[in-house]
Image 1 (tube, rainbow over the protein chains, first blue to last red):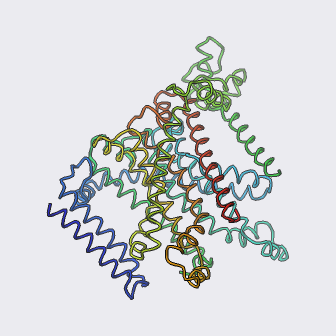
Image 2 (image 1 turned 180 degrees about the vertical axis):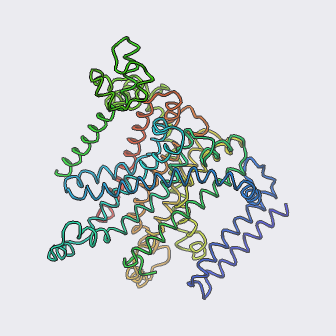
Image 3 (image 1 turned 180 degrees about the horizontal axis):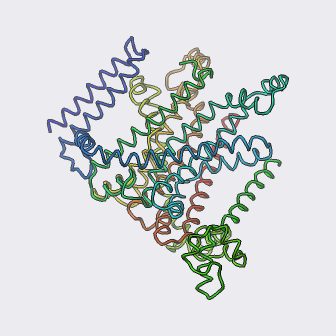
Length: 282
Length: 305
């Protein structure tokens, strides 16, 4: 019972520190902006640990963070194999194929006004559909290994990426196009020097949306059949064995991989579109 | 008008490609069946055919081409097969029948809507809290944004099993998965929306001596509506995916996800495709419904849609 009381105290203390920091004179500095969410996260972890210990929550309902950490450290090699299978092969492979296919298609579609008119509504429509559902079909076609997962990812990322790139290629204004025209620029020159750079913020928006979709596709597709390695496989079998600490360790890996993947794309965006108003302000 | 023609052309092209794709996808199955029926097939044995390329088989056995669109368990069913299956399992069956897609869709839909309602309600509440409290903004908002980049759907199997072990089953576990998938998009969109009034408008409210409550109800909430609806549309699509995925790990017997899983176990491809299309139609209807509500509501509020 003391532990539960302690958890309550920790929560109040964490909140009090954050309230002081957030309403204090240095609230707008970068350091405080980073510190406050970190303190909040740590408080939650501590409260979680104390509550699980204090209330004797069984392992099959919620393992304590320390248990998860121990499990994580103990099974690094398994986690790495799963990571390589699901993220590096399935998700990344599909992501690269899907995004580049969509990019090339977008450039082709952009040449014809008729196609663009027809494809944009269809693409927008498809982007809102539950495409994960194609997973059983693609697993049937491409087998249990990572190829089928990559195929699911390709289907999932294609349309969001296509719609964003097509919209981006319309971004250069009439005035700017006319200027390229008066310079007697060829189609390729105006594409490479004006329209693609202008489309970059949209392209990166598509790429960023696709990072999460890629991970979701690769993990969910493994629920429909996989070799005996992979994050989705490990999650579903560990759940079956009630080894919830392993499930949480996989979820930590998924979270780290997702944030890292997104962070990489966002960093690339910052480096390539430094001229855009949305990047200049910060 | 021009757009309609263009869209129809694209859709027709997709359907045409689909029919063409059926030929190489299904040719091997068709030839195997033809051989069993005693017909002359080139090359004669199944083993030789397995090594041959699909296009070569098509060229050598052109008599079989018209059969690839009516195979019983095709690798890729033809569009009309899916449409017929959809028609038979929706209109021709009683709604209460276990074979009726409407029955399964309604199971998934109820989980989706319940989860969506919970997720949106909590999301809006948290967004209001974030806009009004600087501490909450600084502590919670970064985590809400980070959570968008991680595949939280990986939690789904665990939630089902954990809730099952404490005796909760049926609709609620799926609804919880649907809820947390729609929760974060709504929080992020709603915070953006509640912050969308500019300084000029806030200053005007101040000169009217408006209280914090009045600013909220008369300025912030109305101006957040376009943002809210954008994230609601994302949220409901995510909720549907959550409800479908929530049906996978426990081997649920009812619901569109269960139909997908059963179809993939028994190789009933037509059933998978029809469940997939039912899910797509459901998603489209839900998003369209939200779009309609948005247009009516924003129209009455005088916002240009």
